[in-house]
Image 1 (cartoon, rainbow, N blue to C red):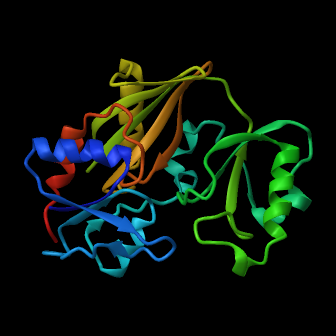
Image 2 (cartoon, rainbow, N blue to C red):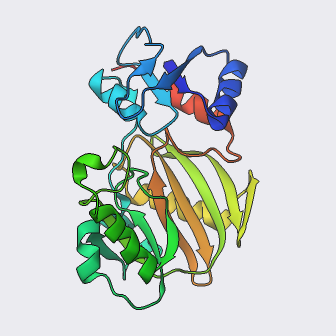
Length: 261
């Protein structure tokens, strides 16, 4: 597999794992909003290239028909197999940004929001209803031609749920239907990175993976423990998700074993 990396703190960790496995890689910068790489890579076999860095790398992978390139994923909230396990999935509200001023409840409460697509236009976070409506007005005041790629747009679909008290949060890396590594990344309100997971949380994550075997050849899944039990938070693109304390040697080995074609 030919590895193309965009330099970040996380991809430097990946490079160390590649070095340990004696797998070659090259560093590249990404031209904003265009997706071209500097320097331009020399592709040996377009059916055996993988890229790690920012989500914008998908444009280069798609333009140049690289496989696996970037493992794109479908919006997890549309996957019916996972609906019974979603954190607040049953009472989620879905609105495009342009619909918020008229349809979003101005109830003075806190809401968790995130884009439905794995586009990184807005990180998942909690805002008051008034802050959400103000954000919508701010974006809608712009002409769509003024909005740069990668930012919230008038037609961005957002998911809103009631905030839930979370006790622990884990990230797991799934490659070809197998969980290859994992990491704790939050305990209560504290950000804590440790290579550990509770046994029942691992069993729960395995159940999620088995419930949706055709989702994607490789992806990241985040789960959590709440007062009401274990829940699925979301999925993320494996090429652009933070590594925390994952075992990167195991992750690199699993991805490098993808056969060309």
